[in-house]
Every structure is written in structure tokens, then in C-alpha cells.
Amino acid sequence: MDSGTEMDFQVIVKNEADLRIEIQMPEAVQKTSVFEILLSSKTDGENPAVYKYKASPDSQALITPEETQTEGVLTAQKGLYALTLDSLREGLHFADNFPGICPGDDLKLSVTGYSASGQALYLPVTRAVETNSLFAGLRDQGGRATYISRMDAIFRICPMRFRPLGEKKGAGERRLAMKSFPPG
Image 1 (cartoon, rainbow, N blue to C red):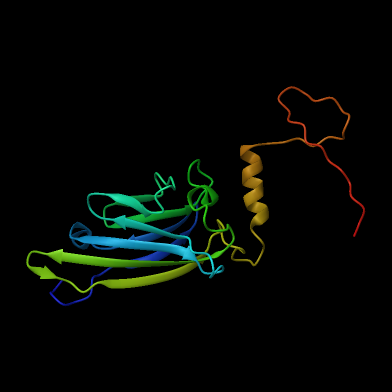
Image 2 (image 1 turned 90 degrees about the vertical axis):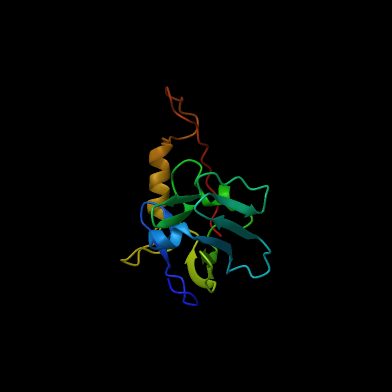
């Protein structure tokens, strides 16, 4: 990078096995830069919850709110930082790590990069992206709702068998009471 030029980095939404934001850059930029990441709800403009992270070569940490536990949410690899927003993996569920934002809200995320090298100070650069907080978004490529596939994955992790009330429970089964309600 030449003095006075923009930092070279990209912010990309990845919605595959996990919903995550990747900040990608050349390794030389990563070694001399600090990134500030702000995450908030776009849907709920009155909601003051903002999650602020700092990513640097030495550490990746949540700055505010302090009472939120988010171990493993922000990680580093060569040439990138990854912020996991939602996953089926233990400890990386959206509602657990971002309790101040309603699951299903549209999110806005801004990343500001600051860099200094030797005697040069580079201009800060901000990049922004928006996404939905639901894992796999609201709809997949074919336009089908993905809530069902998410629930299917959850029930594979925690299977249940449904049976009429009054029937005896078998070994290893959980009892789930089912009631019928009048229409309307």
C-alpha cells in the first residue's frame, strides 16, 4: 500500500454451512491493520443494541456490550477474519450470541479498517453489508422458504416421536402433548 491510498479489503456474506461475514485481505494488510466491526438491526431502528468487535493481528474480541459471551464468534485465519452470525454448531446460535437483536431481523454490518506501516498512516476505509439474521436467509435459490430445512436439521439433532396422548412412552422417548384447537 502506498501512503494516502485506500486499504485493500473486502466484506463478504457467506451463507453456506454457517451464516458468516468474512473480511478478506492480503496478508500484508492483515499484519498492519486493525478492524472495527459494528453489527446492528436494520429492521428495528429503535433498537439500540450494537455489537462492536475489534480484530487485529494480536486479538479478536467483542468490545461492547461487555456482558455478552461470544467466544469463537470472531476468528482469524491468514488473510481473513470471520464473524459467525448463526450456525447449527453449539455456541454459535444467533440468539445466544446477539441477544439484543431479534432473530429474523435484517442486519447492517459496517467494517472500518485502520492501517499504519512504518512512518505511514493510511486513510481509514469503511465497507458495509446487509443480510438477514436467519441461517440460510428467508428463501433459498429456488424461492422456497428455508424455515423447514432449518427445523429439519434441528429435529435431526434432537429427534422426537409424536404419539397420541395416553399412549405409553417407550424407552428414550420424550413425551409431547398435542392438543387440538377449534378453527378461527
